[in-house]
Image 1 (cartoon, rainbow, N blue to C red):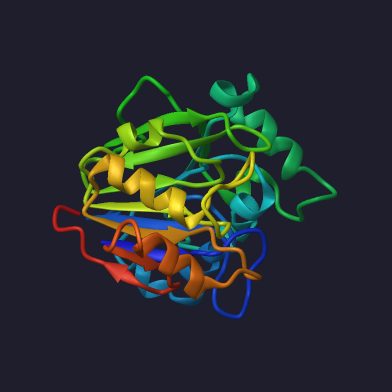
Image 2 (spheres, rainbow, N blue to C red):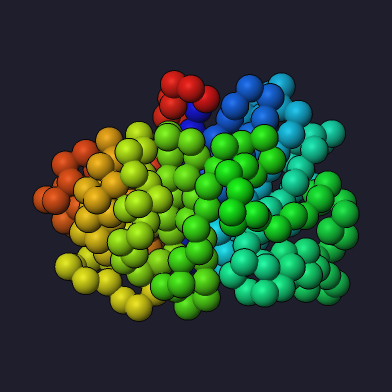
Length: 249
């Protein structure tokens, strides 16, 4: 099951928390990005009933994608929590060194060791994040590098990137593509994609469906949806709280 915990970008709004997506597989959970949406695991503890391990994979280190790490002390007491990041691959610095800077005093009241069990760098050449079947690629079309993810043949997640045709290859044949749609119009910026560009990636990937995520709270979301559907009809807007059966998960 895929749970959309946070489908907004930059800052939370009354409708959307910032980026956080949960894939549950038996007693294990994979979280893609730790934005403010991760707080739903504390306010809706039934989401983690029976879970023994949580792996949290960060696409990059901007605050709207990792501030939720500071909430982990309130989530799933007794559950193993492992954080994975693209520090070495994208920045040449280990993920643990980056997080130690962000979560050190006086920025955090809790020591890193109180929040999660371990921190690991993503193996870009591998096909696993913990027990999960995940492949990753570096995106160099954002203000700072980010990474995109593919979970088996079920889900691909591409956020915080300008239009990147290579993500069509990463997402080839997936059931569902989660792609950022920060801007309207035909062409995005040097660091963010439009809804039309998200649709182009979905078409190149031959994905079955597209959900627009990392939505700017100031944007005209109906226009984003219309622009994407004009190219790729099987598009929907990301909605916090939506649960999507994945069949094999």
